[in-house]
Image 1 (cartoon, rainbow, N blue to C red):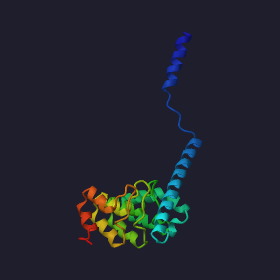
Image 2 (image 1 turned 90 degrees about the vertical axis):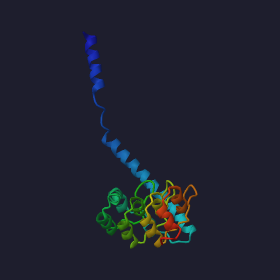
Image 3 (image 1 turned 180 degrees about the vertical axis):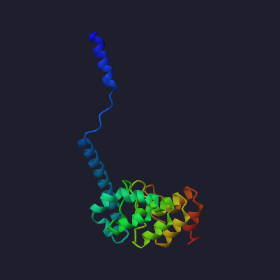
Image 4 (image 1 turned 180 degrees about the horizontal axis):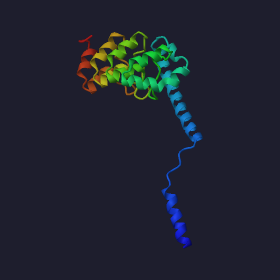
Length: 198
């Protein structure tokens, strides 16, 4: 009878759900994610500062220091940008959120998201804040124009080119926006980049 009881207890122990992570473990995991994001932001900033200095352009003052407001609200701005909530994005920019601040670990900015989603209104809105349309994200080294080329966003490419986006910048694989438009068969963007639509 003693064996039966111990076997029964053993079975009960196996059925218990796994314990939730302790508060300390959750805080540690959160800090690790924040450290990863901070490292990604620093890498993004370093990469684009070097590129800017090599091209004799001025460094973006919004990226020269890390803004605690931006770090605190980055996820909210990222979500609002993908949902096309211009009023939310506008409110955060009004409160000091830098227009070229990297929104994720790949270093995508509001301009990258507008290019990917084809949000012309968002892109036109951002122009008044003078974003760096040549800013390269970390993962592939894509500019907003390259993102427009990959996603065949002709109107976005047109807006970017009219506002000074450089179609000859190379990504990490040595490809330009023109190369990517051809690779992804983005015929509308090819026309824009070849000058027939601008």
